[in-house]
Image (cartoon, rainbow, N blue to C red; front, side, top):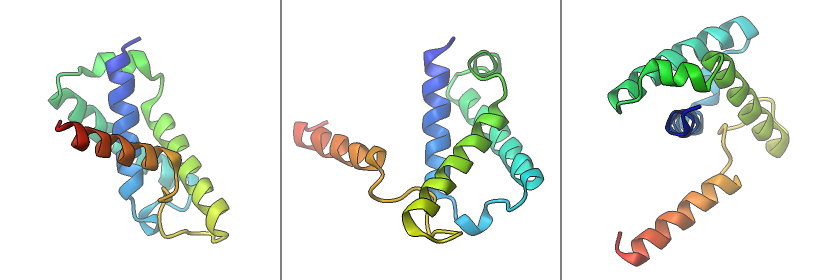
Length: 114
Protein backbone atom coordinates (compact mmCIF):
# COMPACT_ATOMS: atom_id res chain seq x y z
CA UNK A 1 0.00 0.00 0.00
CA UNK A 2 1.30 3.41 -0.93
CA UNK A 3 1.73 5.77 1.98
CA UNK A 4 2.11 8.74 -0.35
CA UNK A 5 -1.17 7.89 -2.10
CA UNK A 6 -2.95 7.54 1.25
CA UNK A 7 -1.53 10.81 2.53
CA UNK A 8 -2.28 12.69 -0.69
CA UNK A 9 -5.89 11.48 -0.91
CA UNK A 10 -6.68 12.03 2.77
CA UNK A 11 -5.21 15.54 2.69
CA UNK A 12 -6.88 16.36 -0.63
CA UNK A 13 -10.30 15.14 0.52
CA UNK A 14 -10.03 16.95 3.85
CA UNK A 15 -9.14 20.16 2.04
CA UNK A 16 -12.05 19.85 -0.38
CA UNK A 17 -14.54 19.09 2.39
CA UNK A 18 -13.25 21.94 4.52
CA UNK A 19 -14.11 24.51 1.86
CA UNK A 20 -17.37 22.94 0.68
CA UNK A 21 -20.46 25.06 0.92
CA UNK A 22 -22.96 22.86 2.77
CA UNK A 23 -25.69 23.98 0.39
CA UNK A 24 -23.79 22.35 -2.49
CA UNK A 25 -23.57 18.94 -0.80
CA UNK A 26 -25.99 16.51 -2.40
CA UNK A 27 -29.14 15.87 -0.40
CA UNK A 28 -29.93 12.36 -1.65
CA UNK A 29 -27.75 9.27 -1.53
CA UNK A 30 -27.72 8.95 -5.31
CA UNK A 31 -26.66 12.55 -5.80
CA UNK A 32 -24.03 12.25 -3.06
CA UNK A 33 -22.53 9.20 -4.80
CA UNK A 34 -22.43 11.12 -8.09
CA UNK A 35 -20.80 14.10 -6.37
CA UNK A 36 -18.25 11.81 -4.68
CA UNK A 37 -17.49 10.10 -8.01
CA UNK A 38 -16.80 13.49 -9.58
CA UNK A 39 -14.55 14.44 -6.67
CA UNK A 40 -12.75 11.09 -6.95
CA UNK A 41 -12.03 11.75 -10.62
CA UNK A 42 -10.72 15.21 -9.79
CA UNK A 43 -8.59 13.78 -6.98
CA UNK A 44 -7.00 11.22 -9.31
CA UNK A 45 -6.20 13.94 -11.86
CA UNK A 46 -4.63 16.13 -9.17
CA UNK A 47 -2.65 13.16 -7.84
CA UNK A 48 -1.36 12.36 -11.33
CA UNK A 49 -0.24 15.98 -11.56
CA UNK A 50 1.84 15.34 -8.44
CA UNK A 51 3.35 12.17 -9.91
CA UNK A 52 1.06 9.67 -8.16
CA UNK A 53 -0.43 7.28 -10.72
CA UNK A 54 -4.05 6.11 -10.57
CA UNK A 55 -2.86 2.54 -10.04
CA UNK A 56 -1.21 3.59 -6.78
CA UNK A 57 -4.44 5.20 -5.56
CA UNK A 58 -6.41 2.13 -6.65
CA UNK A 59 -4.14 -0.06 -4.52
CA UNK A 60 -4.62 2.23 -1.50
CA UNK A 61 -8.41 2.64 -1.86
CA UNK A 62 -10.78 -0.10 -2.97
CA UNK A 63 -13.41 2.50 -3.87
CA UNK A 64 -12.24 6.11 -3.74
CA UNK A 65 -15.72 7.51 -4.35
CA UNK A 66 -17.09 5.48 -1.42
CA UNK A 67 -14.26 6.78 0.79
CA UNK A 68 -15.10 10.36 -0.19
CA UNK A 69 -18.82 9.76 0.43
CA UNK A 70 -18.01 8.53 3.92
CA UNK A 71 -15.79 11.53 4.63
CA UNK A 72 -18.50 13.95 3.51
CA UNK A 73 -21.10 12.15 5.65
CA UNK A 74 -18.81 12.25 8.68
CA UNK A 75 -18.06 15.95 8.24
CA UNK A 76 -21.74 16.72 7.81
CA UNK A 77 -22.59 14.69 10.93
CA UNK A 78 -19.89 16.44 12.98
CA UNK A 79 -21.22 19.82 11.85
CA UNK A 80 -24.83 18.91 12.63
CA UNK A 81 -23.87 17.51 16.04
CA UNK A 82 -22.06 20.71 16.97
CA UNK A 83 -24.54 23.24 15.68
CA UNK A 84 -27.85 21.47 16.21
CA UNK A 85 -28.80 22.55 12.68
CA UNK A 86 -29.66 20.25 9.83
CA UNK A 87 -27.31 22.16 7.51
CA UNK A 88 -24.51 23.89 9.41
CA UNK A 89 -22.58 26.79 7.95
CA UNK A 90 -19.39 24.77 7.48
CA UNK A 91 -18.70 21.08 7.07
CA UNK A 92 -15.53 21.36 9.17
CA UNK A 93 -15.82 23.40 12.32
CA UNK A 94 -13.11 25.87 13.34
CA UNK A 95 -12.56 24.03 16.62
CA UNK A 96 -11.93 20.72 14.86
CA UNK A 97 -8.63 19.46 16.39
CA UNK A 98 -7.14 18.83 12.94
CA UNK A 99 -7.67 22.46 11.98
CA UNK A 100 -6.13 23.70 15.22
CA UNK A 101 -3.16 21.35 14.85
CA UNK A 102 -2.53 22.58 11.31
CA UNK A 103 -2.56 26.18 12.51
CA UNK A 104 -0.16 25.34 15.33
CA UNK A 105 2.11 23.50 12.91
CA UNK A 106 2.16 26.54 10.61
CA UNK A 107 2.98 28.83 13.55
CA UNK A 108 5.85 26.56 14.57
CA UNK A 109 7.19 26.51 11.01
CA UNK A 110 7.00 30.31 10.82
CA UNK A 111 8.78 30.63 14.17
CA UNK A 112 11.58 28.40 12.89
CA UNK A 113 11.84 30.39 9.69
CA UNK A 114 10.66 27.62 7.42
